[in-house]
Amino acid sequence: MCGIVGYIGQRRAYDILIQGLHRLEYRGYDSSGVAIINEEGSLNIYKSKGKVEALEHYAENKDLSGNIGIAHTRWATHGEPNDINAHPHCSESGRIAMVHNGTIENYSVLKEALSNKGYTFVSQTDTEVAVQLIEYIMQTNNCSAFEAVKEATKRIVGAYAIAVVDRQNPNTIIAARQSSPLVIGVGEDEYFIASDATPIIEYTNKVVYLNDGEIAVINRGEELKVYDCKSADESKIEITELQMSIEELEKGGYPHFMLKEIFEQPRTLADCISGRISADGKQVTLSGIIEHKDIFLNTNRIIIVACGTSWHAALIGKHLIEDFCRIPVVVEYASEFRYSNPVITKGDVLIALSQSGETADTLAALEKAKSAGAFVFGICNVIGSSIPRATDSGCYIHVGPEIGVASTKAFTGQVTVLAMMSLLIGQMKGTISDSKLQEIASDIRRVPTLIKEIFKLNDQIQELAKIFTYAHNFLYLGRGYNYPSALEGALKLKEISYIHAEGYPAAEMKHGTIALIDNDMPSVVIAIKDNVYEKTVSNIQQVKARGGKVVAIVTEGDTIVSQMADYVLEVPQISECLTPLLTAIPLQLLAYYIAVNKGRNVDQPRNLAKSVTVE
Ligand code: M6R
Image (cartoon, rainbow, N blue to C red; front, side, top):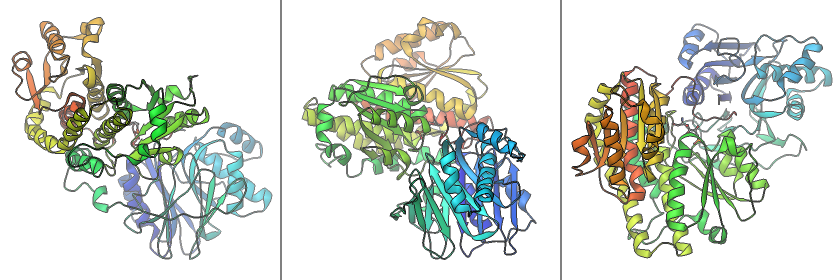
């Protein structure tokens, strides 16, 4: 959580920092702040509770001059969201300022030790402890901020990406990372620091991804230097060229990123598929798998770890892989897996599924499996993020930056990659016939066009949303491939509208949940024509018999469900295993319009942040 930005160069730092904070606001929006050293050597810090806009308002008419600075947008962990707990935090003397993304686990021990030495603290944050520690080291060791930060990283336990400025040295920013992302943009006589590349792309496409345990010294007008914090050895700098455009980071005329991202799906899925399925549908290519063919041919088990929406995609992946590869698949919440005692053997393959590639629990689960000898494979969206860098192999979903906190296009991208993956492994193992592979691969190629067809439901869904805006509870029901779709539909509604919703396997409902059904408890039932269609029809009848309202998502031309459901949304016919790619669209739109009707902040729902880089 939290986004950090830094700048050193010739331009006015404030403008770049603020613009960068807007780009990173999806990571946290409880409070924000900037620290800038001006020409006279004053360190000006402005902070404000709330969104970046509130900070801009607060900073109006203040001294915003200076061409070196750091900034932060916060998702609160230690201490409530208020002005005092907002970053940047300052050392007691006012000399050092720091921004931090992550959590310092031993902060209370460090705080006590520093308190005993006479340090006082104004905030409740772990970050203030770290910045005081840095100044304490500078004073006791009589060293530079760089030496002090390096030493502090040896005493701090936890996750951090930090940027530090020293009022007495206005030509240097120090940055370091451990388990939280940090990217340095390399411009002409200027450098940018950010939690991800989105604040950097409009200035330069050359970036350096800092590795865990590294510290960077960014000196004005000099070459970037990166060192290993422990050994102090200089690291070889690898400059990566970003493949990202600014248009991808803008709303492009849509009122919200979420709506833009929903409507982008025909293109993002075309990008995801591009070059991976031959025109005749006979061949699937995913180099991350082909290069490790023996591993996938010989594995006896695949474990998929993920959180939230990615976990729902993983459940669909289980069906796909078991159906087409006949390999047993276990899907685990990463947060549970990392603290459990799983039996992992060398022949296991662990797939870490994550849009951001930064989710702390998924990363930790991956590390656990890796150290137990499993082959670890990543399926991520954000290029260069921590998970792809920690895995043995993987493939990107290539759906472009997802900025709305509610995941939409990443979900369909993940399912698409899992589908292609299962076809490829199935083909390698001979567990899928050529004709079946060709049928499904060709259907994957049709998905973007079919999704465009589904967008014709937009007005109908908008009307439907009006009817249900004031519901207090919702049930989402589905079976087989679309049970995870029901979970995902419920999560979408919950997180952006704050309406309570539960996803259930439709048949499981009668073991308890059915007691909730009445006229005030609408059910969204995914009742497409699949191998359990008749069973789902019975479940709808059970709901109707108890006075429940039913919104059904059905296959085009369905005449049975339309007679019993109150409202029907039709999606085109496609191979059963791909139906979640189509049913996802009306579920996303329904949640979106209900949330808009309720006046919610769709892109930045309360209490949430896009990347969950804390436990
Ligand atoms: O970046 P990840 O895919 O690892 O994120 C996992 C979850 O935090 C994420 O899917 C979350 O549940 C979304 N807000 C759902 O829309």
